[in-house]
Length: 191
Image (cartoon, rainbow, N blue to C red):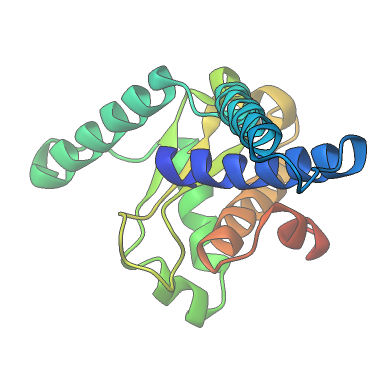
């Protein structure tokens, strides 16, 4: 997951390349007048900034999503601080625990430092799972994997075997993101 300023800079770079190419092809600058060149540069900069802002606004993260994630983190940390008050795992949580246990030992080792959290907010984010962090290779942000019970049970809950298989696939999909695979790469792995 990328941060806001980095998203803006990435979008600005893409918009700058596209705008520069369009200006160059549609109206090549004349070297005889510095005024024309300054006007073209100013218009191009304005288009780049507006396009970058619009792109980030359209694909950016919602503030509600971040607040919701923080709420899940606080609840998880509160439960971890007082293990005596934790109840026994639900059937779904047991399916997630079993999915973790089914992983090869090397991958289970990766999850020792990455909390796997069960949430009921999947319908809101339209997902079965989500990885938060900046991959195993970096250590700038806390890593977390969220498995969304509500969407998984909604779509696969009628068949316990299918639900278990989808939880396993979702966990592996999010773990692949933790290992550094982007969405296309993870799908290329069949996850």
